[in-house]
Length: 489
Image (cartoon, rainbow, N blue to C red; front, side, top):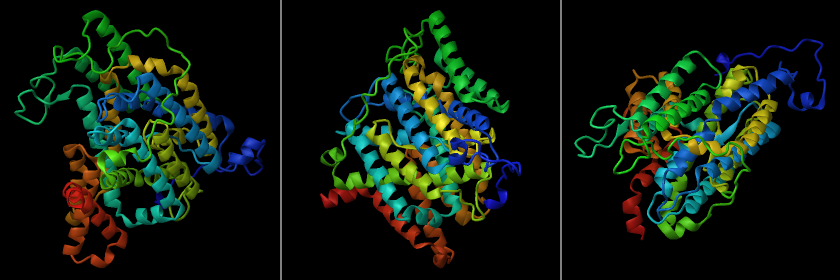
Protein backbone atom coordinates (compact mmCIF):
# COMPACT_ATOMS: atom_id res chain seq x y z
CA UNK A 1 0.00 0.00 0.00
CA UNK A 2 2.79 2.39 0.90
CA UNK A 3 4.40 2.05 -2.49
CA UNK A 4 1.35 3.57 -4.15
CA UNK A 5 1.03 6.49 -1.76
CA UNK A 6 1.17 9.98 -3.05
CA UNK A 7 3.82 12.25 -1.61
CA UNK A 8 2.63 15.66 -0.41
CA UNK A 9 4.54 18.69 -1.66
CA UNK A 10 7.51 19.47 0.56
CA UNK A 11 7.32 22.81 2.37
CA UNK A 12 9.93 25.44 1.57
CA UNK A 13 13.14 24.96 3.57
CA UNK A 14 12.69 28.23 5.41
CA UNK A 15 8.98 27.64 6.09
CA UNK A 16 8.00 27.92 9.73
CA UNK A 17 4.60 27.69 11.44
CA UNK A 18 3.20 31.20 11.57
CA UNK A 19 0.51 30.78 14.26
CA UNK A 20 -0.78 28.34 16.92
CA UNK A 21 -3.25 26.74 14.48
CA UNK A 22 -0.45 26.02 12.04
CA UNK A 23 1.73 24.55 14.78
CA UNK A 24 -0.99 22.39 16.33
CA UNK A 25 -2.20 20.89 13.06
CA UNK A 26 1.29 20.76 11.46
CA UNK A 27 -0.08 22.50 8.39
CA UNK A 28 3.22 23.86 7.08
CA UNK A 29 5.03 20.68 8.07
CA UNK A 30 2.73 18.66 5.84
CA UNK A 31 3.19 20.99 2.91
CA UNK A 32 -0.17 22.74 3.11
CA UNK A 33 -1.55 26.16 3.98
CA UNK A 34 -4.48 27.35 6.08
CA UNK A 35 -6.36 28.53 2.99
CA UNK A 36 -5.82 25.17 1.30
CA UNK A 37 -7.12 23.34 4.37
CA UNK A 38 -10.22 25.56 4.48
CA UNK A 39 -10.92 24.91 0.81
CA UNK A 40 -10.33 21.16 1.20
CA UNK A 41 -12.62 21.01 4.24
CA UNK A 42 -15.44 22.72 2.35
CA UNK A 43 -14.98 20.41 -0.64
CA UNK A 44 -15.33 17.41 1.65
CA UNK A 45 -18.49 18.88 3.17
CA UNK A 46 -20.18 19.53 -0.16
CA UNK A 47 -19.15 16.09 -1.40
CA UNK A 48 -20.70 14.21 1.53
CA UNK A 49 -23.46 16.58 2.63
CA UNK A 50 -25.96 14.44 0.73
CA UNK A 51 -26.17 12.33 3.90
CA UNK A 52 -28.20 15.14 5.50
CA UNK A 53 -30.85 14.39 2.89
CA UNK A 54 -30.44 10.63 2.55
CA UNK A 55 -30.34 9.64 6.20
CA UNK A 56 -33.83 11.06 6.92
CA UNK A 57 -35.17 9.28 3.84
CA UNK A 58 -33.72 5.91 4.88
CA UNK A 59 -34.50 6.12 8.60
CA UNK A 60 -37.68 8.15 8.29
CA UNK A 61 -39.34 5.92 5.70
CA UNK A 62 -39.42 2.75 7.82
CA UNK A 63 -41.79 2.02 10.70
CA UNK A 64 -40.43 0.14 13.67
CA UNK A 65 -41.85 -3.12 14.98
CA UNK A 66 -44.62 -1.20 16.77
CA UNK A 67 -45.65 0.75 13.68
CA UNK A 68 -44.02 4.04 14.68
CA UNK A 69 -41.78 6.31 12.61
CA UNK A 70 -38.49 7.55 14.07
CA UNK A 71 -39.25 11.29 13.67
CA UNK A 72 -40.08 13.85 11.00
CA UNK A 73 -37.47 14.35 8.29
CA UNK A 74 -36.29 17.79 9.45
CA UNK A 75 -35.56 16.51 12.97
CA UNK A 76 -33.55 13.56 11.64
CA UNK A 77 -31.71 15.88 9.24
CA UNK A 78 -30.80 18.41 11.94
CA UNK A 79 -29.55 15.73 14.32
CA UNK A 80 -27.65 13.97 11.52
CA UNK A 81 -25.81 17.22 10.76
CA UNK A 82 -25.18 17.98 14.43
CA UNK A 83 -23.59 14.61 15.21
CA UNK A 84 -21.55 14.67 11.99
CA UNK A 85 -20.28 18.16 12.83
CA UNK A 86 -19.24 17.39 16.40
CA UNK A 87 -17.54 14.10 15.54
CA UNK A 88 -15.73 15.46 12.49
CA UNK A 89 -14.32 18.32 14.57
CA UNK A 90 -13.28 15.75 17.17
CA UNK A 91 -11.48 13.74 14.49
CA UNK A 92 -9.60 16.82 13.36
CA UNK A 93 -8.59 17.95 16.84
CA UNK A 94 -7.73 14.55 18.35
CA UNK A 95 -6.31 12.64 15.37
CA UNK A 96 -5.18 15.55 13.15
CA UNK A 97 -6.26 13.64 10.06
CA UNK A 98 -8.34 14.97 7.13
CA UNK A 99 -11.20 12.54 7.70
CA UNK A 100 -14.87 13.44 8.11
CA UNK A 101 -17.58 11.36 9.78
CA UNK A 102 -21.35 11.06 9.43
CA UNK A 103 -24.09 8.46 9.57
CA UNK A 104 -22.91 5.43 7.63
CA UNK A 105 -24.74 4.54 4.45
CA UNK A 106 -25.43 0.82 4.50
CA UNK A 107 -25.26 0.79 8.28
CA UNK A 108 -28.37 2.97 8.50
CA UNK A 109 -30.10 0.60 6.11
CA UNK A 110 -29.19 -2.35 8.34
CA UNK A 111 -30.60 -0.53 11.37
CA UNK A 112 -33.80 0.45 9.60
CA UNK A 113 -34.66 -2.66 7.62
CA UNK A 114 -33.04 -5.45 9.66
CA UNK A 115 -33.34 -4.26 13.28
CA UNK A 116 -35.95 -1.56 13.91
CA UNK A 117 -38.52 -3.34 11.74
CA UNK A 118 -38.36 -6.56 13.81
CA UNK A 119 -41.69 -7.39 15.52
CA UNK A 120 -42.00 -5.62 18.85
CA UNK A 121 -38.84 -3.54 18.40
CA UNK A 122 -38.92 0.22 18.84
CA UNK A 123 -36.55 2.76 17.33
CA UNK A 124 -35.14 3.37 20.80
CA UNK A 125 -34.39 -0.35 21.14
CA UNK A 126 -32.71 -0.41 17.72
CA UNK A 127 -30.55 2.60 18.55
CA UNK A 128 -29.62 0.95 21.85
CA UNK A 129 -28.18 -1.94 19.86
CA UNK A 130 -26.15 0.59 17.84
CA UNK A 131 -24.77 2.08 21.06
CA UNK A 132 -23.82 -1.37 22.33
CA UNK A 133 -22.06 -2.10 19.05
CA UNK A 134 -20.13 1.15 19.28
CA UNK A 135 -19.02 0.42 22.84
CA UNK A 136 -17.88 -3.06 21.85
CA UNK A 137 -15.86 -1.67 18.95
CA UNK A 138 -14.28 0.91 21.27
CA UNK A 139 -13.14 -1.89 23.59
CA UNK A 140 -11.79 -3.84 20.61
CA UNK A 141 -9.81 -0.79 19.48
CA UNK A 142 -8.38 -0.06 22.93
CA UNK A 143 -7.28 -3.68 23.33
CA UNK A 144 -5.77 -3.89 19.84
CA UNK A 145 -8.21 -6.62 18.83
CA UNK A 146 -9.76 -4.65 15.99
CA UNK A 147 -6.38 -4.19 14.32
CA UNK A 148 -5.57 -7.86 14.82
CA UNK A 149 -8.83 -9.05 13.24
CA UNK A 150 -8.47 -6.56 10.39
CA UNK A 151 -5.04 -8.01 9.64
CA UNK A 152 -6.42 -11.56 9.81
CA UNK A 153 -9.12 -11.09 7.15
CA UNK A 154 -7.82 -11.51 3.58
CA UNK A 155 -7.89 -8.51 1.28
CA UNK A 156 -10.28 -10.27 -1.11
CA UNK A 157 -12.98 -10.52 1.58
CA UNK A 158 -12.41 -6.92 2.68
CA UNK A 159 -12.80 -5.77 -0.91
CA UNK A 160 -15.88 -7.94 -1.46
CA UNK A 161 -17.54 -6.41 1.61
CA UNK A 162 -17.24 -2.91 0.12
CA UNK A 163 -18.40 -4.05 -3.32
CA UNK A 164 -21.37 -5.95 -1.89
CA UNK A 165 -22.48 -2.98 0.20
CA UNK A 166 -22.23 -0.87 -2.96
CA UNK A 167 -24.62 -3.17 -4.82
CA UNK A 168 -26.94 -3.26 -1.81
CA UNK A 169 -27.09 0.53 -1.61
CA UNK A 170 -27.65 0.84 -5.36
CA UNK A 171 -30.51 -1.66 -5.17
CA UNK A 172 -32.13 0.34 -2.37
CA UNK A 173 -31.82 3.44 -4.56
CA UNK A 174 -33.55 1.80 -7.53
CA UNK A 175 -36.35 0.48 -5.30
CA UNK A 176 -36.84 3.78 -3.46
CA UNK A 177 -37.24 5.56 -6.79
CA UNK A 178 -39.76 3.07 -8.16
CA UNK A 179 -37.37 2.24 -11.00
CA UNK A 180 -37.47 -1.32 -9.68
CA UNK A 181 -40.64 -2.64 -8.06
CA UNK A 182 -42.16 -5.81 -6.68
CA UNK A 183 -44.75 -6.80 -9.31
CA UNK A 184 -48.35 -7.13 -8.05
CA UNK A 185 -48.71 -10.60 -9.57
CA UNK A 186 -45.40 -11.78 -8.07
CA UNK A 187 -44.56 -13.49 -11.37
CA UNK A 188 -40.98 -12.37 -10.82
CA UNK A 189 -39.25 -11.15 -7.63
CA UNK A 190 -38.88 -7.64 -9.06
CA UNK A 191 -39.58 -5.84 -12.32
CA UNK A 192 -38.67 -2.65 -14.16
CA UNK A 193 -41.03 0.21 -13.22
CA UNK A 194 -44.70 -0.69 -13.55
CA UNK A 195 -45.42 -3.74 -15.69
CA UNK A 196 -41.93 -3.55 -17.13
CA UNK A 197 -42.32 0.07 -18.27
CA UNK A 198 -40.99 3.40 -17.00
CA UNK A 199 -44.29 5.23 -17.18
CA UNK A 200 -44.55 7.63 -14.23
CA UNK A 201 -43.43 11.19 -13.60
CA UNK A 202 -41.51 10.33 -10.41
CA UNK A 203 -39.45 7.72 -12.28
CA UNK A 204 -38.79 10.35 -14.96
CA UNK A 205 -37.48 12.66 -12.24
CA UNK A 206 -35.22 9.85 -10.94
CA UNK A 207 -33.80 9.07 -14.38
CA UNK A 208 -33.08 12.73 -15.11
CA UNK A 209 -31.42 13.10 -11.71
CA UNK A 210 -29.31 9.98 -12.18
CA UNK A 211 -28.13 11.02 -15.64
CA UNK A 212 -27.36 14.54 -14.41
CA UNK A 213 -25.41 13.22 -11.43
CA UNK A 214 -23.39 10.88 -13.62
CA UNK A 215 -22.58 13.67 -16.08
CA UNK A 216 -21.46 16.00 -13.28
CA UNK A 217 -19.24 13.29 -11.83
CA UNK A 218 -17.70 12.50 -15.21
CA UNK A 219 -17.02 16.22 -15.62
CA UNK A 220 -15.41 16.11 -12.12
CA UNK A 221 -17.64 18.86 -10.74
CA UNK A 222 -17.09 19.36 -7.01
CA UNK A 223 -20.19 18.58 -5.00
CA UNK A 224 -21.74 16.73 -7.95
CA UNK A 225 -24.01 14.61 -5.76
CA UNK A 226 -25.42 17.55 -3.82
CA UNK A 227 -25.83 19.71 -6.94
CA UNK A 228 -27.76 16.92 -8.68
CA UNK A 229 -30.03 16.36 -5.66
CA UNK A 230 -30.85 20.08 -5.48
CA UNK A 231 -31.43 20.34 -9.23
CA UNK A 232 -33.58 17.21 -9.34
CA UNK A 233 -35.65 18.45 -6.40
CA UNK A 234 -36.36 21.68 -8.28
CA UNK A 235 -37.40 19.59 -11.30
CA UNK A 236 -39.68 17.51 -9.06
CA UNK A 237 -41.32 20.66 -7.67
CA UNK A 238 -42.02 21.86 -11.24
CA UNK A 239 -43.38 18.44 -12.28
CA UNK A 240 -45.68 18.32 -9.25
CA UNK A 241 -46.91 21.87 -9.86
CA UNK A 242 -47.72 21.09 -13.51
CA UNK A 243 -48.87 17.47 -13.41
CA UNK A 244 -50.29 17.31 -9.85
CA UNK A 245 -48.85 13.83 -9.38
CA UNK A 246 -49.50 13.57 -5.62
CA UNK A 247 -48.14 11.08 -3.16
CA UNK A 248 -47.83 7.35 -3.70
CA UNK A 249 -50.68 5.23 -2.32
CA UNK A 250 -52.66 2.10 -3.15
CA UNK A 251 -54.90 4.22 -5.38
CA UNK A 252 -51.98 6.19 -6.81
CA UNK A 253 -49.00 3.80 -7.16
CA UNK A 254 -47.30 6.18 -9.59
CA UNK A 255 -47.10 9.06 -7.11
CA UNK A 256 -44.07 10.51 -5.36
CA UNK A 257 -42.79 8.44 -2.45
CA UNK A 258 -42.37 9.84 1.06
CA UNK A 259 -42.38 13.56 0.24
CA UNK A 260 -44.53 15.37 -2.30
CA UNK A 261 -42.23 18.13 -3.59
CA UNK A 262 -43.42 21.69 -3.10
CA UNK A 263 -41.91 25.09 -2.35
CA UNK A 264 -41.30 25.12 1.44
CA UNK A 265 -42.83 27.64 3.80
CA UNK A 266 -39.42 28.21 5.35
CA UNK A 267 -35.83 27.33 4.51
CA UNK A 268 -34.06 28.29 7.73
CA UNK A 269 -35.36 27.37 11.18
CA UNK A 270 -34.12 26.67 14.67
CA UNK A 271 -33.01 23.02 14.59
CA UNK A 272 -34.93 20.36 16.49
CA UNK A 273 -32.56 18.04 18.38
CA UNK A 274 -35.25 16.11 20.24
CA UNK A 275 -33.81 12.81 18.97
CA UNK A 276 -30.75 13.20 21.19
CA UNK A 277 -30.79 10.47 23.80
CA UNK A 278 -33.50 8.53 21.95
CA UNK A 279 -32.17 5.07 22.73
CA UNK A 280 -32.79 2.21 25.13
CA UNK A 281 -29.56 0.41 25.88
CA UNK A 282 -31.04 -2.92 26.95
CA UNK A 283 -34.69 -2.52 25.95
CA UNK A 284 -34.30 -4.90 23.03
CA UNK A 285 -33.52 -7.83 25.35
CA UNK A 286 -37.11 -7.95 26.58
CA UNK A 287 -38.41 -7.78 23.01
CA UNK A 288 -36.29 -10.35 21.16
CA UNK A 289 -34.12 -12.07 23.78
CA UNK A 290 -30.46 -11.89 24.73
CA UNK A 291 -29.27 -14.31 22.03
CA UNK A 292 -30.87 -12.29 19.23
CA UNK A 293 -29.45 -9.05 20.68
CA UNK A 294 -25.93 -10.49 20.80
CA UNK A 295 -26.22 -11.69 17.21
CA UNK A 296 -27.56 -8.32 16.01
CA UNK A 297 -24.75 -6.45 17.78
CA UNK A 298 -22.35 -8.88 16.14
CA UNK A 299 -23.86 -8.35 12.69
CA UNK A 300 -23.66 -4.57 13.03
CA UNK A 301 -20.11 -4.85 14.30
CA UNK A 302 -19.09 -6.87 11.26
CA UNK A 303 -20.74 -4.39 8.89
CA UNK A 304 -18.91 -1.53 10.65
CA UNK A 305 -15.69 -3.31 11.55
CA UNK A 306 -13.55 -2.97 8.46
CA UNK A 307 -14.93 0.16 6.84
CA UNK A 308 -12.90 2.75 8.74
CA UNK A 309 -9.59 0.93 8.45
CA UNK A 310 -9.96 0.72 4.68
CA UNK A 311 -11.15 4.33 4.50
CA UNK A 312 -8.32 5.80 6.56
CA UNK A 313 -5.71 3.92 4.53
CA UNK A 314 -7.28 5.07 1.25
CA UNK A 315 -7.46 8.71 2.39
CA UNK A 316 -3.97 8.54 3.86
CA UNK A 317 -2.64 7.14 0.59
CA UNK A 318 -4.29 9.95 -1.38
CA UNK A 319 -2.71 12.49 0.98
CA UNK A 320 0.70 10.85 0.97
CA UNK A 321 0.57 10.38 4.75
CA UNK A 322 1.18 6.63 5.02
CA UNK A 323 4.33 5.24 6.59
CA UNK A 324 6.47 2.47 5.13
CA UNK A 325 4.02 -0.15 6.46
CA UNK A 326 1.05 1.56 4.85
CA UNK A 327 -0.35 3.00 8.09
CA UNK A 328 -1.53 6.60 8.53
CA UNK A 329 -0.23 8.76 11.39
CA UNK A 330 -2.08 8.53 14.73
CA UNK A 331 -4.07 5.53 13.49
CA UNK A 332 -5.03 4.54 17.04
CA UNK A 333 -6.59 7.97 17.67
CA UNK A 334 -8.45 7.73 14.35
CA UNK A 335 -9.93 4.37 15.33
CA UNK A 336 -10.85 5.56 18.82
CA UNK A 337 -12.76 8.58 17.48
CA UNK A 338 -14.48 6.41 14.89
CA UNK A 339 -15.53 3.93 17.58
CA UNK A 340 -16.91 6.74 19.74
CA UNK A 341 -18.79 7.92 16.64
CA UNK A 342 -20.56 4.57 16.29
CA UNK A 343 -21.93 4.79 19.83
CA UNK A 344 -22.64 8.53 19.59
CA UNK A 345 -24.72 8.08 16.44
CA UNK A 346 -26.91 5.54 18.20
CA UNK A 347 -27.19 7.69 21.33
CA UNK A 348 -28.36 10.58 19.14
CA UNK A 349 -30.94 8.39 17.39
CA UNK A 350 -29.48 8.73 13.88
CA UNK A 351 -27.62 5.40 13.53
CA UNK A 352 -23.92 4.57 13.68
CA UNK A 353 -21.54 7.27 12.46
CA UNK A 354 -18.41 6.29 10.59
CA UNK A 355 -15.56 7.73 8.52
CA UNK A 356 -16.39 8.76 4.94
CA UNK A 357 -14.34 7.89 1.88
CA UNK A 358 -15.65 11.16 0.38
CA UNK A 359 -12.98 12.79 2.54
CA UNK A 360 -10.66 11.88 -0.33
CA UNK A 361 -12.33 14.66 -2.34
CA UNK A 362 -11.02 17.28 0.09
CA UNK A 363 -7.62 15.59 0.16
CA UNK A 364 -7.59 15.66 -3.62
CA UNK A 365 -8.13 19.40 -3.37
CA UNK A 366 -5.13 19.80 -1.08
CA UNK A 367 -6.26 18.99 2.49
CA UNK A 368 -3.51 17.32 4.54
CA UNK A 369 -4.41 17.92 8.20
CA UNK A 370 -7.15 17.76 10.78
CA UNK A 371 -7.83 21.46 10.33
CA UNK A 372 -9.72 20.57 7.16
CA UNK A 373 -11.90 18.26 9.26
CA UNK A 374 -12.59 21.10 11.67
CA UNK A 375 -13.82 23.21 8.74
CA UNK A 376 -16.00 20.34 7.48
CA UNK A 377 -17.45 19.92 10.97
CA UNK A 378 -18.29 23.61 11.30
CA UNK A 379 -20.07 23.47 7.94
CA UNK A 380 -22.17 20.54 9.21
CA UNK A 381 -23.10 22.48 12.35
CA UNK A 382 -24.24 25.45 10.26
CA UNK A 383 -26.29 23.07 8.11
CA UNK A 384 -28.45 22.15 11.11
CA UNK A 385 -30.37 25.38 10.52
CA UNK A 386 -31.27 24.28 6.97
CA UNK A 387 -33.00 21.06 7.99
CA UNK A 388 -36.54 22.13 6.89
CA UNK A 389 -35.58 21.97 3.21
CA UNK A 390 -35.05 18.22 3.55
CA UNK A 391 -38.80 17.71 3.81
CA UNK A 392 -39.30 18.85 0.23
CA UNK A 393 -36.85 16.33 -1.28
CA UNK A 394 -38.69 13.29 -2.71
CA UNK A 395 -36.91 9.94 -2.60
CA UNK A 396 -36.82 10.03 -6.41
CA UNK A 397 -34.48 13.05 -6.21
CA UNK A 398 -32.21 11.56 -3.54
CA UNK A 399 -32.12 7.96 -4.77
CA UNK A 400 -29.68 8.68 -7.63
CA UNK A 401 -27.06 9.39 -4.96
CA UNK A 402 -27.49 5.88 -3.58
CA UNK A 403 -26.93 4.42 -7.04
CA UNK A 404 -23.86 6.56 -7.68
CA UNK A 405 -22.33 5.85 -4.26
CA UNK A 406 -22.97 2.18 -4.99
CA UNK A 407 -21.05 2.52 -8.24
CA UNK A 408 -18.11 4.13 -6.47
CA UNK A 409 -17.95 1.24 -4.02
CA UNK A 410 -18.28 -1.42 -6.74
CA UNK A 411 -15.24 -0.05 -8.61
CA UNK A 412 -13.08 -1.80 -6.00
CA UNK A 413 -14.04 -5.14 -7.56
CA UNK A 414 -10.86 -5.03 -9.67
CA UNK A 415 -8.88 -5.67 -6.49
CA UNK A 416 -10.12 -9.28 -6.40
CA UNK A 417 -8.17 -12.03 -8.19
CA UNK A 418 -11.03 -13.56 -10.19
CA UNK A 419 -8.78 -16.22 -11.74
CA UNK A 420 -8.11 -17.75 -8.34
CA UNK A 421 -11.35 -19.62 -7.60
CA UNK A 422 -10.58 -20.26 -3.92
CA UNK A 423 -10.43 -16.48 -3.52
CA UNK A 424 -12.98 -15.39 -6.11
CA UNK A 425 -15.86 -17.70 -5.16
CA UNK A 426 -16.10 -16.54 -1.51
CA UNK A 427 -15.81 -12.94 -2.72
CA UNK A 428 -18.59 -13.53 -5.27
CA UNK A 429 -20.95 -14.94 -2.66
CA UNK A 430 -20.18 -12.07 -0.28
CA UNK A 431 -20.98 -9.57 -3.03
CA UNK A 432 -24.17 -11.01 -4.52
CA UNK A 433 -25.85 -12.19 -1.32
CA UNK A 434 -25.97 -8.69 0.14
CA UNK A 435 -28.50 -7.34 -2.39
CA UNK A 436 -30.11 -10.74 -3.05
CA UNK A 437 -30.87 -11.39 0.63
CA UNK A 438 -31.27 -7.70 1.53
CA UNK A 439 -28.69 -8.31 4.24
CA UNK A 440 -25.13 -7.03 4.47
CA UNK A 441 -24.35 -9.49 7.24
CA UNK A 442 -25.53 -12.50 5.23
CA UNK A 443 -23.10 -11.61 2.46
CA UNK A 444 -20.16 -11.14 4.79
CA UNK A 445 -20.93 -14.38 6.61
CA UNK A 446 -21.23 -16.46 3.45
CA UNK A 447 -17.95 -15.06 2.14
CA UNK A 448 -16.03 -15.78 5.34
CA UNK A 449 -17.40 -19.30 5.78
CA UNK A 450 -16.74 -20.26 2.16
CA UNK A 451 -13.23 -18.82 2.31
CA UNK A 452 -12.36 -20.96 5.33
CA UNK A 453 -13.89 -24.09 3.77
CA UNK A 454 -12.05 -23.67 0.47
CA UNK A 455 -8.73 -22.94 2.16
CA UNK A 456 -9.12 -26.20 4.08
CA UNK A 457 -10.00 -28.09 0.89
CA UNK A 458 -6.90 -26.89 -0.98
CA UNK A 459 -4.63 -27.58 1.96
CA UNK A 460 -3.96 -24.03 3.16
CA UNK A 461 -5.09 -24.68 6.73
CA UNK A 462 -1.84 -23.38 8.21
CA UNK A 463 -2.24 -20.09 6.34
CA UNK A 464 -5.61 -19.42 7.97
CA UNK A 465 -5.36 -16.97 10.82
CA UNK A 466 -6.97 -18.27 14.06
CA UNK A 467 -9.32 -15.30 14.02
CA UNK A 468 -10.75 -16.48 10.70
CA UNK A 469 -11.81 -19.73 12.36
CA UNK A 470 -13.44 -17.75 15.16
CA UNK A 471 -15.26 -15.41 12.78
CA UNK A 472 -16.47 -18.33 10.64
CA UNK A 473 -17.85 -20.17 13.69
CA UNK A 474 -19.63 -17.02 14.87
CA UNK A 475 -21.21 -16.58 11.44
CA UNK A 476 -22.40 -20.19 11.44
CA UNK A 477 -24.11 -19.43 14.75
CA UNK A 478 -25.57 -16.28 13.20
CA UNK A 479 -27.08 -18.20 10.27
CA UNK A 480 -28.71 -20.78 12.57
CA UNK A 481 -29.80 -18.27 15.19
CA UNK A 482 -33.49 -19.12 14.65
CA UNK A 483 -33.19 -22.80 15.61
CA UNK A 484 -30.58 -21.80 18.20
CA UNK A 485 -32.98 -19.42 19.93
CA UNK A 486 -35.69 -22.08 19.90
CA UNK A 487 -33.33 -24.67 21.37
CA UNK A 488 -32.02 -22.34 24.09
CA UNK A 489 -35.45 -20.93 24.85
